[in-house]
Image (tube, rainbow over all chains, first blue to last red; front, side, top):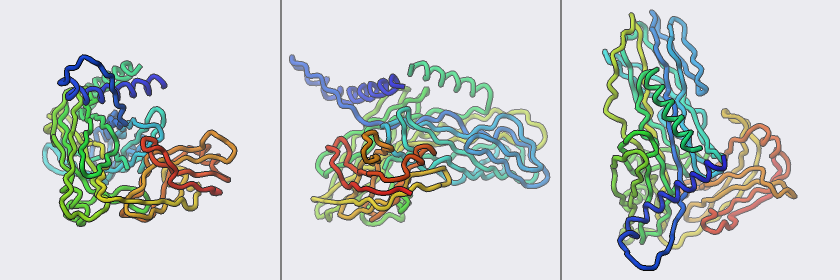
Length: 165
Length: 274
């Protein structure tokens, strides 16, 4: 774990050096001064998507829920196949830093053959305190499937941000 | 070790591509530093790096956010912004606003500030949002799904915001630590206390909770702000159950300035946590 922290610090240094290079490279002098500024950083990576997988709709409207832990609950009248997952985001930054999480509360999905569906979204935490190895949060949701929902590939996008105070 | 993890990440992405509906995972990002404070005369720089495995286009914009009593940041539509928030948007200039980066390519975003003549003293703030622009609708492969089957792909558009603060005039502020408690929240146990602020600017710093007589802190949380739009906020820090149990009893809470600014004490208090 220590090595990761070290690498991160080095990465930060490398970036700062690159940032400084632009002006430093132009000044050709005989004396060399080594300068590096370490900037505090934050990284956000998306390691899995919110997947409801495949749903076969029934004669009545129903819902499919994927918890922030990734467990799927298939509503009555529906058939669910494939592997469902919650979206996962990893945050890395200063040890101990408090990062707020915000994002859309719902999303509209549009079908490739017409039709729409809506999904509410749930977040595992409103804020994350980063540890030595960073932190993470998950996004689950509840999808509303209409009675005899038009078949097709449904897609939608939702916004998520990690906010420093 | 990092490389190994990276490789594993790449591998899992590749596997995902084969096994499920392809969803673009491009857009991972790094932003440094995590907070900008400008005094109105000099500009600064922010570094944006594409840490994903694919080229990505990022958009940089300014947003208005207001702190809530619970300590969250509410997004405010530009139409609902007040005069000071509008002034902040007008003062802060930055470039570029859109950039396409190959993997591991950093880009410097230059941030300048122009304070118009006659701007009343105070703190002006906007939040800079760095976010990947999603690729053009991923070509959904038509899949043979029988009957009334639907397949679903949800793509997150994710980003990072950092505050950009412009201070005009000589501003001062103080903060005071209120009652502390261990509370049971929807997300699990949390250490909570109230933080009140007075003065013309925000306060920002780190929290350290110690037990009198024990040098090792029970809890450390960095980067906690109280912005001028609120005079008090709740600080709620999620903690594991064993830390929550250890926090009960007499504690010393210290709220100190950022280490980069010397780490001076803003306020400290002895509290008994219930």
